[in-house]
Image 1 (spheres, rainbow, N blue to C red):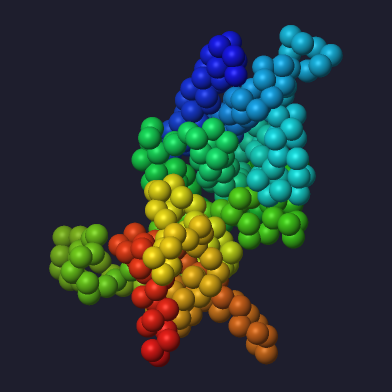
Image 2 (image 1 turned 180 degrees about the vertical axis):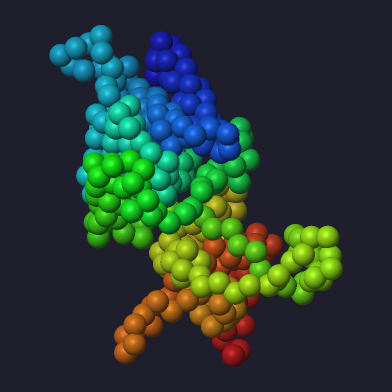
Length: 334
């Protein structure tokens, strides 16, 4: 890049990060009712500036202008098509949905739309974090703690009849159409680059290092009762094997941690490495980590929890140079 291009590049990168932070802060502010629409606006702005900065870095200043209109820069739609050329890429499909939300938000969006779009917005936030690092070497965690990248979502069931009485049939029909269409494609189903959610759960335990402590006493000032509730396995165990491997590799790369086997550096955390952890820690038979999603008479097919990802990363961080060798030895002995 020449001096002019470098100046434009730096300005676009800075403004992109500011727009991204505004999207996060706006969505997580509890007093704002315009947060779905506002988050979509600022996320689209952040992506447009990010992709234009990347195009300048890759192809020069001229690449962000229309050939027949040299005074007009590319729209976000055109930037997306230029950078993410595979139209079936879940990341591109996610962005197209967010752009669609931004475009329709100028007309009418009701609060129940949050439950429909929140998983898409969360995936869009994570995708930005990944691509900012991959395309431009930007670490968002230098500006905002990583845990703040999780959107605070109000999850509740949508009562169609109640909505029909409140908004009328046109709005409800649009809502039903959106809800049924968002995850209708096999290409994006269960793909975290298209849609994802995080679930926080409280669990009673006897471990003394718990984050919260309580005692059950009906005469206490703040009474506590134990309840049992059915849990959707899709919420508790959102990851297939490939997703776990992808998330582990992404975290290791971000932290600059390299695995070693037999004293030699190892490029990636692989499926074989994951199976070592599964066998060594009996993950498939531990409800904290895995759930068999297959039907009767089908071959077992497992999904994994966020705790499985977190614990694997924790173990690797403690001994990256020898953990794979140690687990191989333990599994062999068994």
